[in-house]
Length: 117
Length: 231
Image (cartoon, rainbow over all chains, first blue to last red; front, side, top):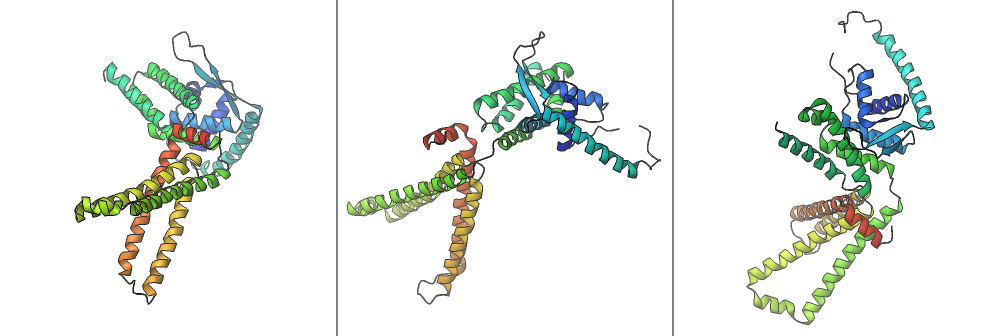
C-alpha cells in the first residue's frame, strides 16, 4: 500500500501525539511517525518545522536547544516537549479523532471486498 | 553523484530556504537554518542518498515560505502600522511632488527650460523631458511602496490595491465627465481611458513591487522602523 502524506492539521496532531510519549527533536519526531504508522504515513519533513513553530506559538510545546554536539559530531539539536496546554490539546484531539474514526467506520467498516494489506 | 556535487546540492538547497527567510530577525533565521541543516545532515548520514533526502524534505522555496508564514502568524501586525504606512506613502509622494514643483519654479526663474531647449535639438529635448517624467512617475510609486512595505509589510499591498481602485474610479469618472461635457477639450475618450488605465496599472505595479521589496528586506525594515521610532 502506498504511503499517505498527512494533511497539515494531521501533522500537528501527530507531533502532539509523538511528544506525548516524551521530548524529541525534529528528526526523531519524523522517524517516530514513520515507525508508529508502520510507514503508512509519509511525512514531508520540511512541513514539520512550520508546524512546530505554530505549536510553539500556541503554547502547546516548548523547544530548547541542547548546545552540546553529539559524540558522533552531529550538530546541536533543538528538543521539543509538551506543555500542560499541549497535553490538554492532545487529549482534545484524541477525543475528536475517536468520534470521527467511529463515524467513518460506520461507512467503511461494512465494506468487505478490500485487498489484503 | 560525486561527493562534491552532493555537498553543492545541499548548500544550494539550504541557500534557497534561507532566501525565503530573509524577513526573519537574524538570530531567528540562524536558528531555523541550524535546525534544518542538522535534520538534513542526519537524514543524509542515515540514508546516504542526498537527492532522495532533499526530495523527501520538500521543495526548498515551499519549506522556507511556510516557515516564514509561521513566523508571521506568531507576530501579528499592530493595526496602527497600516495608518503609518499610508502616511509614509503619502509623505514620499508629497515630498517628491514638492521637489518637482520647486525644480520647475527654479528652472523657469533661471530660464533653465529655455537654455535646455537651446542646448538640445527639439526631438532630443522632448525625449529627455519625457524620460525624466517617466522616471519621476515610476520612481515615486516605487519609493512610496518601499516605505510602506517597511512600515506595514502585511497590509501595504491592500493599501496599494485600495489606492489603485479609488484612483481608477476617479480617473474613469473624470474622463467620462470630460467626454460628456460640451467643452472643447474633447479628445478620443477611449484612448484617454486606456492611457489612464495603463498609467495606473503601471504605477500600482511599481508600488506593489516596492512594497514587496520593503517588506522582504529585513535590514531596510529594521533601519526604517528605528528611524521613525517604531523600535
